[in-house]
Length: 138
Image (cartoon, rainbow, N blue to C red; front, side):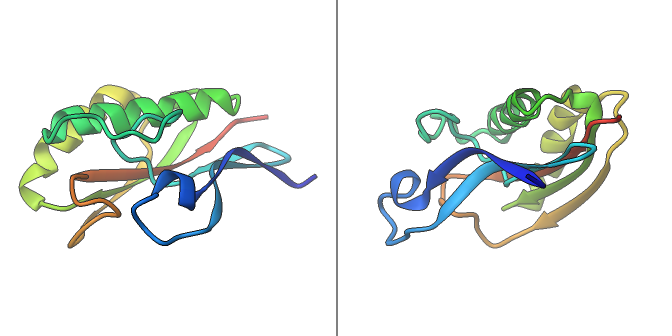
């Protein structure tokens, strides 16, 4: 197999308030060489899809980055294997706090990073979403 899908789910379960029915995965791991592509991580529990109960961008970013770390590790990698991050913010005023918090998780890693300010994310209470790519060396 050229790749496998990690933590498969359907959007009708994770977004019951929306009329969706899409089969997705939290991560896709490409073989050989093990490239891990993560879906955008939001401030919610990976097992229950419940949002954290905070509107603070720092707390939301901690949850997002801990989700990224958990998924990378579940797929056989480490945070030092993260090569790319894409950060989506709903308010540019949160940029410094989000990036400072994100820095706690990528100290010494030096991934490439793109930051975008968007009108909204999939749920109105989300302030930040981050997707990641990791490459596990041979």
